[in-house]
Structures are given as C-alpha cells and as structure tokens.
Amino acid sequence: MLIDRNQSLLLVVDIQEKLAPAIHDGTDAIANNRRLLASAGRLGIPVFVSEQYVRGLGTTVTDLLPLPAGAQIVEKMHFSCTCEPGFLEKLAQTGRRQIIVTGMETHVCVLQTGLGLLAAGYAVFLAEDAASSRTPENRAAAIARMRAAGAHVVTTEMVVFEWLQKAGTDDFRALLPLIK
View 1 (cartoon, rainbow, N blue to C red):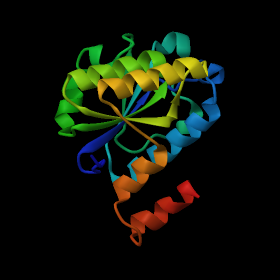
View 2 (view 1 turned 90 degrees about the vertical axis):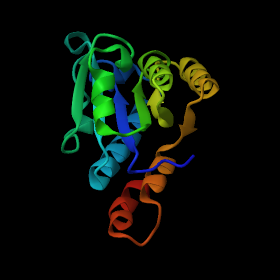
View 3 (view 1 turned 180 degrees about the vertical axis):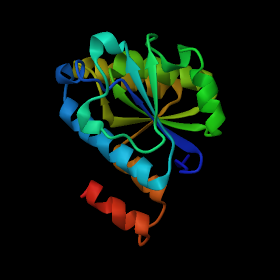
C-alpha cells in the first residue's frame, strides 16, 4: 500500500523540550521530523502534534517550530493520543485514513498511539527514522511490535517520495533540498 497524500496526515507524538535531550539519536529523529513537517506544509497535508504533560515535559522542541499552517496541537495526559477525549473525532473530521506516525518515546506514546489507531481502523505508517526512545532496545522492540500488529514501517524519504509521486514538479524541486 502506497501512502496517498490525499488520504494521509502526519501525527508527531511528543517531541518535547525536556524529553528530547534524553532520546537515543534524538537529533536525527528531530531532523527527520523537520523534513516531514516541511513536506506536509508544502503539500497541504494535515498535521497533528501531541504534547504529553506539558507542565512536566515542556512544549514541542523549538527545532520543529514554526509548525505548518493549520497544524493542530493536542495536549494530552494519556500515553495514547487515541485515548484523549475528542482526538479520534478530530482525526475523523479530516476524512484521512492513513496516519504517518513519528515521535518520542517509540515504546510508550508512539506505540500506544499506533496500536490505538490500528484498533480504530486506520492504516498506520511508522516513520522509524523519525521516532526514537531513550534506549535503542526499547525503540527496536516498539518497532517490531507495531510491525507485528499491522503497522507499515517506513522511512522519512519513503513518505516524502510517496507524497510527491513524481519528479519534475514544482513541489519536487521545492522539497528536493530537504532530502539531499
């Protein structure tokens, strides 16, 4: 199944100021999220950004700001975005059925969100190079579990090129520097 830019949205889970410094390869994950956010903004793909327990973990890292126009920030206390009151209704209002999931920590909030989205009938695409945990072992276990549950494990470049579909367009030329 290819990712369809008219059927997908980007969900960035909990990449927050006080959590990010403790994440294994967090700088790389943040850079890939920046690429995905810029691509989604250029292509008009809806964006949701969750923030877990803002009082304790802070807000989204400044490296990801400003968010694309129209991005929705979802403050949450549940580990899974899907357990937060009103979240699934907001997703349903977009009409999108493919969810590209990224974020921190892969084995907690990203995993629980991904499993909740699968249970709600969404096609889930985990951008594994844009998701990480404090330890590589926890990250690997989460990726394996999500794959076994039916999530598609992809990379940032896979997402961007599937959104683009072809070369030679203005969008392709605009986004190419993000990949090089």
